[in-house]
Length: 257
Ligand SMILES: C[S@@+](CC[C@H](N)C(=O)[O-])C[C@H]1O[C@@H](n2cnc3c(N)ncnc32)[C@H](O)[C@@H]1O
Image 1 (cartoon, rainbow, N blue to C red):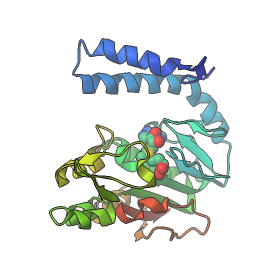
Image 2: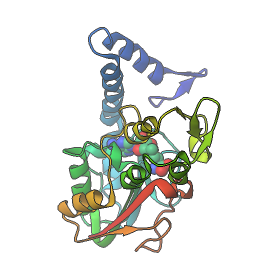
Image 3: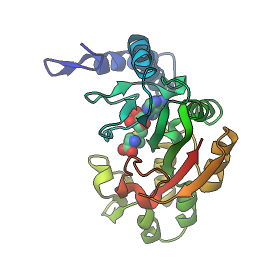
Image 4: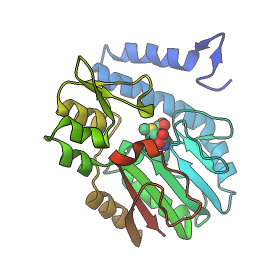
């Protein structure tokens, strides 16, 4: 049975992590304890799956890869994820490199994942790995929350912010609206609460990018051609589809090897 699998309606991996996190809170602040428990869970899964996954994926030639697909795997692509599991998808932690051979991958797509990487270590390693795995002419497409757009709207009206981040007014304040926020409708009484939600997401987001910064770091990793794109527009005709619901608050950048 896979870690995280349910038996009799119980999720043993999640239950175990909760017990570990509770134990760690005696020694550590609770936010760090839950991070450590989560990372321990990932390291167990890495130990269990990484070797088999690498063996399978390193053989592929000409594949297309969706990294951190969440609940939107791309049909016909190699879908890799740290968290969720789908049939035919692969558990993989991209902070530890990529499981493909040099110059074998045709395209890499990653939507709202890159901001989860530590900018000093993981983000640079990830970009270098993308460059290594892509074949010459292969395209990397990175989509992140557009910090530039949020900061330009911040301090103006709520309606202006609602253009890039769907919001509706409620009695308690402004709250998330639309398909991206099923069951996760945060309420904001100040605009800075919204900014923190988008760019910190608890402790999950590690960095905020605008166009200038994202282009700079992708170029610094060694990609020659790096451009801003629009939602649904790509240099690669078979690129994975963007989530259109995220379009107004997202930044789209492509890089060619
Ligand atoms: C905000 S979700 C985006 C999901 C999906 N790409 C989408 O656009 O709906 C971020 C996803 O990145 C995944 N992720 C974060 N760090 C990762 C890593 N180191 N390796 C692989 N996936 C990662 C998370 O598990 C999560 O599913």
